[in-house]
Image (tube, rainbow, N blue to C red):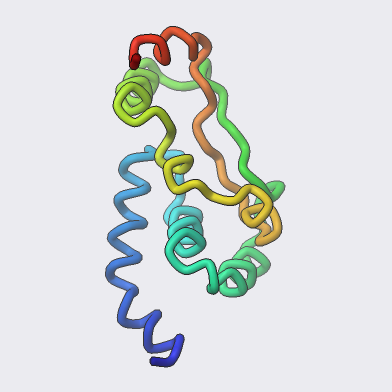
Length: 126
């Protein structure tokens, strides 16, 4: 099967995974960034496609960056704490993106910063 045909056939699945990642991560993750992360995770051979997209849509400095916990609303902090207690890592970290690959593609990813008392919630998990 040609790559173009495979992309066309798998597009609905990729869109579903992209929307799920956005819902789990929260409002800070754009569709385009989520799509690029899902593409890199599910089809690493399509890195050139993500690079081309990133080149056409330049943004902030490439790589994985972290937001600041203290700037979040109380509701968002609670939502993230609940997720971290259940899963141990952010939704993006669960994809296990290769930081050097993300940087080399030119993609800017804003992931969750650690809660100020990370040891407290980690100790509650065990």
